[in-house]
Amino acid sequence: CQKDWVEFQRSCYLFSSSKLDWTTSESNCVSMGSHLVVINSADEQNFIVRNRKEFFWIGLSDIIVEGQWSWVDGSPYNLLFFLFWRFWSPGEPNDAPQGEDCAMLDYQKATGSLTATWNDAPCSRQFKWICEKSIFAQ
Image (cartoon, rainbow, N blue to C red; front, top):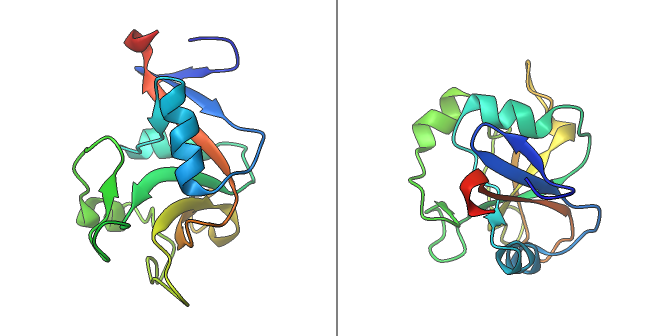
């Protein structure tokens, strides 16, 4: 992986130090040949949240159709899988109070053995962000 990127399994990850809204975060990732992180397994979730007590945008939203969550890279979104692993915080996603269409890692709502869970938030909020790209895309 390039300088400042961290390797895990077959991907490289960049953990930002700056805060941006969700759309600008995704644009930044795309400009670097990547996308906001797409979490495909419990191992990947655990790697991402390990020792990181901050809020981060991830590449999941229901911007296009409310309630239909989709990953930025087109990967299938399996709600039952994510509920089983308890990636979403209890009661989330809830679209409250006035439209929350973008997903973020929320360390304050952590449950069980997870150090962070997912929450839906207004896309205009500013959080740090995580880019992901294939290790072969160097």
